[in-house]
Amino acid sequence: MKQGFWAAIWLSMIAVTSAASDTDATHRVVSFAELQDWELDDHQKALDTFLVTCPDLRDPDWQSLCALAQQKPNPKTYFELFFRPVLVEDGKNALFTGYFEPELNGSTSPSGRYRYPVYREPQVAKITNPWLTREEIETGDFMTGKGYEIAWVDDPVELFFLQIQGSGRIRLPNGGVIRVGYGGSNGHEYRSIGVELVRRGIYKPHQVSAQVIKNWVRRNPVEGQKLLFHNPSYVFFRKLTSVASDKGPLGAMNRSVTGGRTVAVDPKFVPLGAPVWIEKGGNDPIRRLMVAQDTGSAIKGAQRADIFFGTGDEAGRAAGRLRDPGRMLVLLPIQRAFAAATEPYQ
Image 1: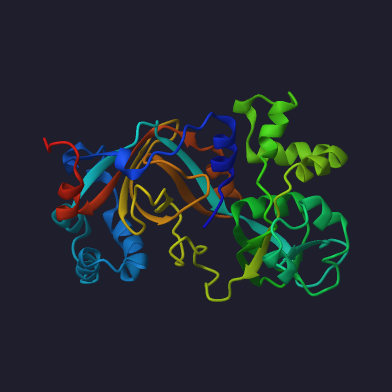
Image 2 (image 1 turned 90 degrees about the vertical axis):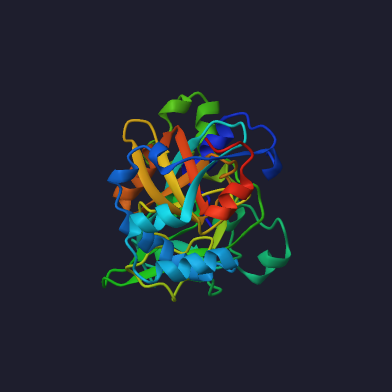
């Protein structure tokens, strides 16, 4: 699971109404002909992504469809024969954001360049909640020299954003890679430093992005460090040795997510593992069949989605720019789709 940067900052900036329960949502079955650019998508890529997680689904309906998918059917025909798109709405406007897997430069031993430790969670933090704040962890000596270090990286700002994303890769000088995932936290509530910059009058809300924040912190090292301390939440990591370096990070289903085909959703409205049709507006529209394979603490609502863009800086820039309207439809097995419908099928 992840805590996407834009997901956290955007929801901190707007007034959030109380969460609707799934019984408050409407479900309308639509035809595939109503999906914009459905005919143009690469349905094979969507089917390949669906096959990553569908073997873990335990419901008989989904198990049967997964077994059929494993027979290598024509992908477009497969989805059209066995699913129906359902528009689930809870009265809130649709919002699409993006997330990615950061890649940092690091080493398994400290040096003049690699000075900032990536920590695993100490036992005391597991039983004391909340524990020390970010500032206390980074300026105190509790963690130092006690074997909690997984690696050391060369940039404290990138390390901060690694914690916000919740997972990433550390590229070593010898070309090797250490993949890390969420391994616990100090229990303090997350506070957005982007919102804090807006509160101070340094930026307007529409000006704030991950890159803007990074640049400001680097231009103002003393005040920048204080800004990072404004967020008392601290994330610990664990090594992920079971995931190949060429695969995506683990999502909420404990399987690798796929760049451009995995979407994080609110599982109260969209079942994990289900195909999801995305119609994202904005400057770079996306019309694509993805799979709901992840969740996030800030992803709340029937029409709220966070698109995974992949690994590295380019993916990070693309994810950081994304904050657009649109609509999302979940593909459900035919019987389930009509059983869930709250409106007559037209």
